[in-house]
Length: 372
Image (cartoon, rainbow, N blue to C red; front, side, top):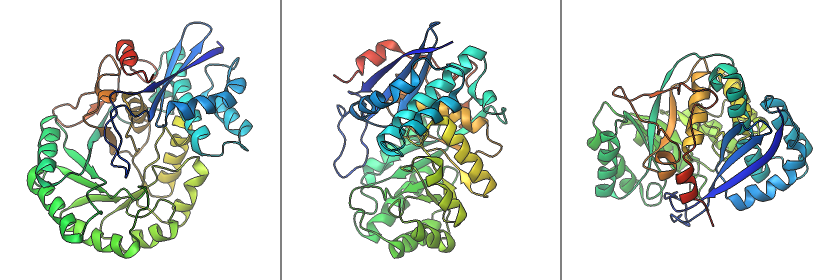
């Protein structure tokens, strides 16, 4: 079975806020759906956390190496793409595009073999995984309402991120954390994401360490992106001194970028995003490297239901996995597939029953969200 075409659809009209300095609007195009098409009619689905303009340009480089290839060898084919565009790619948008293609290739492999991706990645260790509802911070009263709504949707773990946290003073930050803990009570897990990959992030190690001590008083599960993402030395020292676990890694691409964090014990929790880091193939390699380095792996997933499906498959194929990120609420999460993911009464998500990623694209929704 051969690959004969590649179809890209940029998403617009349902884009949620991102927390960025230049805030997103619903019409912004920052996610791309990838469909890899075979000569026998099978179609694999992938997702990229990158504008379709950049993905389309990258695919012009990648397509000559993809068309005519086998549809059932995802790791080899995606590595072929990487190796043959190294001088023009080596990370960035080209690697992001490879990520979406790789996810689609794994979906194809599963559909061809009639197996879930989790089994093809080595075996199924679990069939359910805990999602944490991923939200952005807001001022105190809107924040309380966001949290109440998320809890009502069944989430038993929640992550709060980005502005206004870290953009004012320490007292304002603590008021937000106190309000969050008071709202959800002691039994809902809370994580905090400072958003250190935001434009012109102003804080360094001393701020991060002081803030980590404050977060520890509110039983915060981890402190994410407290520093600029390339401050590996700062992360190593912060991880050594912080009373709460330190997390980072969502912006990194290619497995080689993650190895120094493991080698220098610079992180407690690593967070590759399979829609950017190189796809399921690279995310699987990074997750195993983390496991062997005694670092917790938690996939970053601020994207679409296709990305969430990929994260669930990989989480069920790892010997140690505790969470997946679930952007909520989001039209691209809730409407883009025929049977949306729903949290069960125990606050867990189930591994889909079907082959591949186990999801079916909602073509009406895809057309509605098509960037024009």
